[in-house]
Image (cartoon, rainbow, N blue to C red):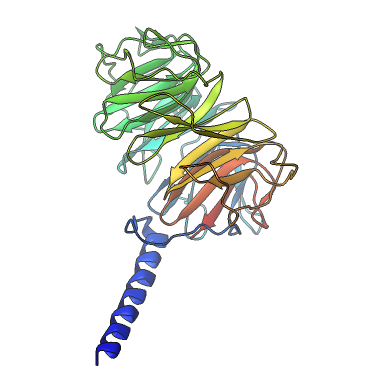
Length: 381
């Protein structure tokens, strides 16, 4: 009787695990912390785009991609105009036809964030969805319609966004936001774009990546700066979310420029990619760098998820020119041997996002994970 009961429990748990995985695949929901979810290194066929993808964001079952493309193309050859921004279903890779927010000719989208209710995009554009907007806009998640109550026009390129609650942080290469002087870094109200007057320090070079600490008290930034928030910081540093003043340790091993970062769950480590071909892990208490991994070209994208550090780069890795994205152990940097998808295209991977349903890469390539994939690819769990 006891053996039978245990067998029944095991069967019930297995069924529950399958149901959870199926739900996560469709809705992008979070799996329990102890669930085993592994990204396959074979990709699934999807619609493609005809240019470089610089930003990816998964929200539920939708993948938003931004870049320099002008057209989305189906596996059967159907072409649909999508300039700089498009949405696809994660589950089957199909274009979300109801979402359209084309940027002006020659414009681009370089960063995308969401709070689950709205979408904010930044880049180098003067209009989006037919509405005049200077390089940053707030959009409807379902339709791409521009939220006309939000205006935070910058006078230069927006490279990074971070949103939490009522606050939106903007990083890039600008000197004004909504007519207010701000040097490459600013905080605005997420609903309206009104500039926070208390957050009034910046960086002396462009800002390329932003991440908030789990407690929301510190904003970590990467870029091409040597001063940040009034203090000496080279390519990587933190500032107070109250007033923008430099906060946290110096990072003596950091160089510039750095292209992006992500942070682990408890906020103890930052993972940074940059022009020096290096993925580096940094401690947020001491500023030390416990490990690094070096590719053969610039490391261009990083995403921490489910105790893996996914990182993208160009050229190759350890002599293999078809490796452009890998996964590293966050504790010691050991490369995961089970995730080594081939990516064909010199410039490789510029953007990565991941949820419990799967992983998405964006960049400049013609195939990934064994399938034709131009601009973006999805790897399901």
